[in-house]
Image (spheres, rainbow, N blue to C red):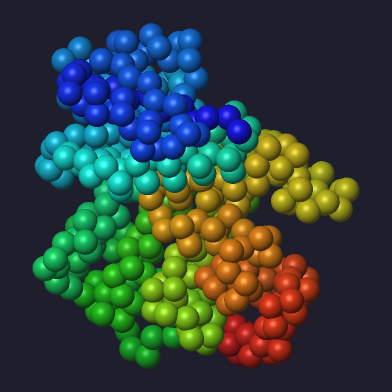
Length: 391
């Protein structure tokens, strides 16, 4: 197989030595290259294609921000990562406006290498150079929004309270109002009206709230595009319904609380690849939909023929760049091909597959993989799932 190629950029000679030795830790399928500044990196990229560029934020000849901005304009295909010793939240937030991931110095070798490997390996999902450009380009929502990042940071802090979480949510008034409206919708089945983010956290849990904030922001990002190929409102409603349904099924089948949350997150983002395609290739997507209807071929087949990747592939790749858990990425990637999953039992992936098939608005019940359910001995549960999702 072809090797993944990573370019490390830094003007610190000791760090460049550290990066040079990473090839051995990353494995035989990786090639490591180094440049001692932004100018040398750009000159190197003019003649060499890379899968990833990892740059220090502060360099003497060119800042990491300037380098990444040049990549977005001239070389959008590589995954972009920033490494910095800054702990200032504003600096980190600014970095995530032009890079996919931010890594804090000092680097911990094993987690750092594992993150780089995972991001590179996900590139197999999008074989088309154009799709790589779309997903890695600035217009594809390359990074999670600031509110999500701060929630993630607070969640990982040892002494975070519900009040701390609520304050972060309340700082973005528009997102806060929309999240509260969603929580109070009939689908969530909350017995009383939820008026504050603190109450929402107590009832939903931080993970669900964090995912809702990210989902709301992701859809908001594309509102101005107004694509003709799909309705943003319908796609959001479907995604939310699938998320809620997947979590309900996960609980019904006694999955762990963590797996139930993963089912919700995967359900919420299972069709985010459609947003990327609609916002960046709307005319082709419209044409493909017409062809799909006229020739009777599936949307998945149409997407693969036109773009070289499906919306499920693209969504999984984007979530991988965001650093989502592997179980969520797999559920998004395989929600139309559940039989390819690693676990041959009820899982977040299966919960999302079933929930999206049972959405009455999209009428996909014929897509339910009955043969696979029989194979793993769960076909007798279809009646209970039907009651749970339609009752």
